[in-house]
Image 1 (spheres, rainbow, N blue to C red):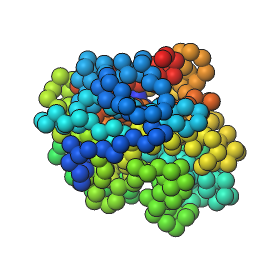
Image 2 (cartoon, rainbow, N blue to C red):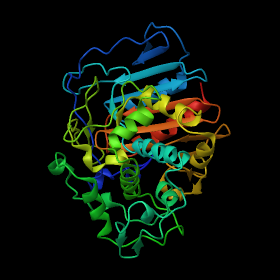
Image 3 (tube, rainbow, N blue to C red):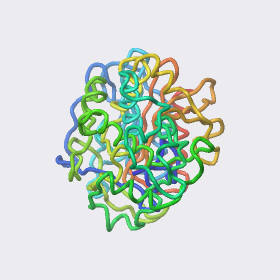
Length: 407
């Protein structure tokens, strides 16, 4: 699954080139199935022609950008959702759901959300902080005694906060997984097995002295949630986040579940730019777990980030912690001035202000998400990873800024 929030694949849950991520769940419905019509509060755009439904205003710049992702960057499909301050959603869908049949891409189809899952996991940890059950500045050793040990690695020196903001120095397990994704995409991994992979390698740096994106941090965050609550991670994310935020098309795949449940476009993987795209819709996403297993849609991701920041999911004190950031290297791919909070990124906008979000890269899907301080979210998804062209994912990332700053 992809490692990072919303940027280049090398930051993704698993960089695709290194077997990075593949958490996709195929669908139980055919790709050509007819999607449900948009509600009165939603508007959809297919290709370049708006559907005749009421509500919201089309962002022409965003539409053009999505069309270019399909036409010039060769993504089979590009989907997006925007929302105004009142929560009125507008959906966009360009391209095809199935390269063989040419079926129209479903509006607001389900995709693998990759490392956006980290933000869901962080939200649960922060809720536990608000309930007095977890201390952000306590060592992970307090909750998972004697578990985090390795060369230069000691759970007594790594805090919960350092896990959530990627300053722990823990090695990233996805960098050490087998490189041939297509041979292992149906393998099931237990969370502790993923942690074991990481702990076989030495620390990247002493805790709190540097920053490096590591999926291992969020595997530990998931184990923390299970230890403190005494309940499964998927149940806690569903009960504490998905249901309160009203996310009707979002779910945490069950053990062994490889198919996407709802209406969705197929997911494609390109071994390298220009290579033929391969269908990787059906995958076992267990290797992503708390770092990248969730399936969602653009409109649900928009609703999630709005609920995360408006007080629906977190108390004010925990929103403040969420937004407490550390600097990340410009080389990470988020852009100059990017910072990382507790499961969210903060990136300057060209028109002033900042957007908050995350995102994910996982074989078959890439998602890019953002929300402004005044509560306007945007979510973009494309249905191939690695990208068919060299700059495809950079263009998808840049399109967030376009959505906020141009009309």
